[in-house]
Amino acid sequence: MARIWNFSAGPAALPQPVLEQVRDELLDWHGAGMGVMEMSHRGKEFTGIVQQAEADLRALLGVPESYRVLFLQGGATQQFAQIPMNLLTGGSADYLVTGSWSKKALKEAQRVVAGTASVRCAGSTEADGFVGLPDPQALAFDPRAAYFHLCTNETIHGVEVPPDYPLPSAVPVVADMSSHILSRPVDVSRYGLIYAGAQKNIGPSGVTLVIVREDLLGRAGPTTPSVMDFSVMAENGSMLNTPPTFAIYVAGLVFQWLRAQGGLPAIERANAEKAALLYACIDGSGGFYRNPVAPACRSRMNVPFTLADSGLDAAFLSETKAAGLASLKGHKSFGGMRASIYNAMPLAGVRVLVDFMNDFARRHG
Image (cartoon, rainbow, N blue to C red; front, side):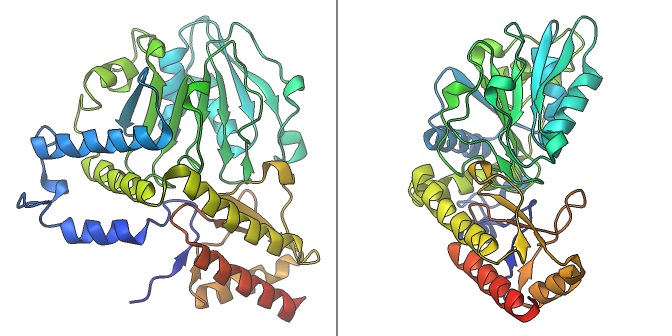
């Protein structure tokens, strides 16, 4: 059976060597006589797995010792509520809205806060169609805010916050990095909390990563459920209840694969090359394909594009499927197409897509 080129935005493709190792260890992990899905999360085998996964993640991202790493459940969407429950018991929080996911995070935070707490929109690009980032000087920061929240890569609209984008220094910065974490080096110390759903660049769906600075623990309100209290989960090593053991195991293998590739500097070079190739195809098509995002903040991970003639959309999708190129249909709120080219997508797959796009444009342009 031939594997397709999978451009899904998530759950997304996993590195083939990782899948092959999972296959080989499915029935018997390292001579244990059982697979990871069957192990007790309290046993020494799984304890070793989760400890190694955390160590490899810390090495990849350079996570300082003053931060705790949590492997949680509920996806990044649960964090939209869990973060204000843990960090906002009074005062206000600022949110930057640059796409669908940060807009949802703002609305959910506004829904769950109570009492004297409030959630503010510090800036938004919705009026312009989410095709860029606001001028940092125009953002309305509250210098006394409990935290400032942003999504550093918008999966649907394809807007990525570059590493040099100014962030407030007076308050903790909370970042949803779900769709580009581990795709490039990041200075963790710039953030108070980083969170990410796994199903893009970390591993299979089911586990959610939270990296939180220790001084932000212990701020949850008295009605916060224990399983949603960061400090309680940190005290219990993410194991207050049964964690998503198999997803953590696979994530750990992905971390090892990334280290074997040369770490995040090497994977960033590969990702930059893939993105440059695809954007060059779009920009060089004479308007046949279009990407509306400002070049300075185009995502390297999620590339949405439209065809000048939307009447060709069905033919494009039908022909890509026949060519072994899958999951290219754009999100319903954007339309058109979207190619997600996460870490596990090799350059060869992007070349196949670009060759198809060029040929399709010649035949239909």
